[in-house]
Length: 149
Image (cartoon, rainbow, N blue to C red; front, side):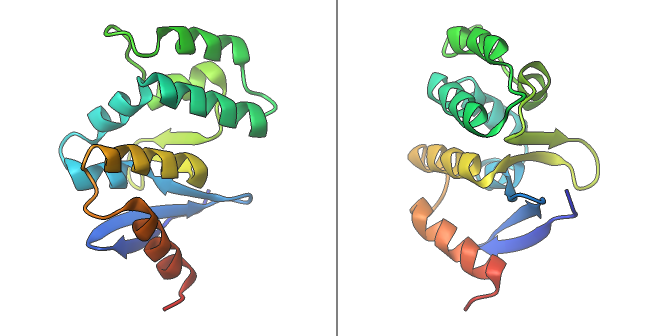
């Protein structure tokens, strides 16, 4: 993936990486809007949700021929339990996922395919993290990214 383009939507800077197939949006940047110091915790809380795991599994089964469904099933059974913890790195490495990427260092963070990022942002909006309805946020992001006024 290439270096990302930063867009600003209602004061929130968001990085969008463009790959050969599609756009990947920074979940880290979206989470930073809610709590700049604990973005990893926000993403991990989202990942431990059973609905999230089921969505990720469905997306991967549709778009990733190398996805590991048996490993996914193990996560699905644990999702929602108090003892269940899942990091993006563990999800990616265990299931061979392609819908989420995670890298450390400069230009690092957790990125997700736009379909998945929309769900993450919607989840954050239900929890009062984003100050505007997400569809408005996404429409503004799309306009800025494509250069349309």
